[in-house]
Length: 85
Image (tube, rainbow, N blue to C red; front, side, top):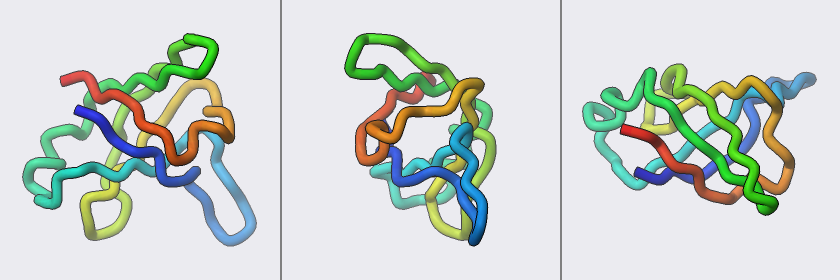
């Protein structure tokens, strides 16, 4: 399953580059709830793979929050990543 990286997780004055917000094609919250705890992998332009984990929902809709050990590059925003099921 693929997801689109929408933005970094941020507040009014801070930004967490290790956490990103993901938007999925599915619109049902019950389907998306099964993805919490799964691994996700982003492949950079150079072929380097950055792995992370889906942590929780963001808000009341189907947007998810994923955490990575190393920060994702700014070029990742708007690109897709793969969710391992």
